[in-house]
Image (cartoon, rainbow, N blue to C red; front, side):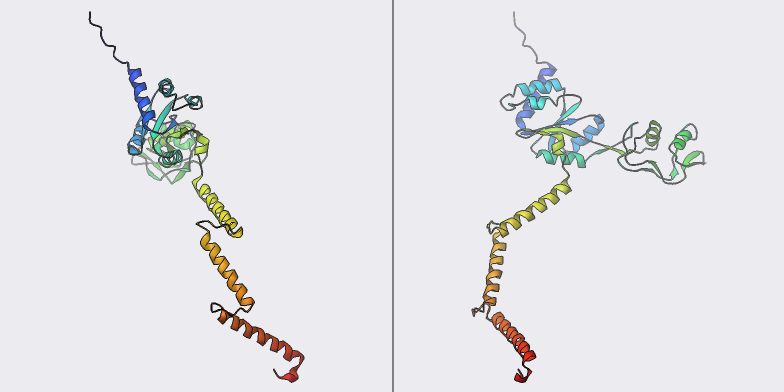
Length: 291
């Protein structure tokens, strides 16, 4: 009797695929999928296909794949504690901070849902909405958007703020914005953590780039000043130290009246000024000398 070879299950194949990705890429991140639709995720996948791979998988399968790579992920428990809720797994060779900024700068437009916080003032423009008069008018009224009926449809009378920045969007306003074809909410992948030879929590990845650059500039200025004042030569400060030493030596030579070719002109000019000043002072006390 011939024994039939057991066909690997879909779960086993999925684990193997994940294991291969963990082996292929040195860096991966766990991203929160909450609020992100499948179509929006596809947009991000397509946009970043040359820089990274995004996969959605069950947390249990990811944990199983990591268990098989115990030598690579020695402290796996620091990673597996993030395996909860709906997640996307990002695999890349890019720096984790670069990954975070990529997703922050490339969010996808989304329709508002009740309870969403307005990221900016949401303005509806004056003009024909194309909507038929009826119950919709009460929603315009609740949102305090002035309307008029013209040519059998609802027109917005003037540009109006439907929700202020920071406000929670009501169910009626969300429904109204959707009917107007507006997508005021920006959604994207928010990294919960990243791994690059160690776990980097999401709040650490969230850096203010402008503030970081400003701090780096100040730090460099302080370091240069310290190096120059301590007369500690480095590649960056050696030219400054040489220039400072030259200026100080030149000043000393001029003040001491040292007649060397580099400063003889300045020495003579200083001697002349001092002579004139002395003559003027003597003349004030002894005008009979007629200096």
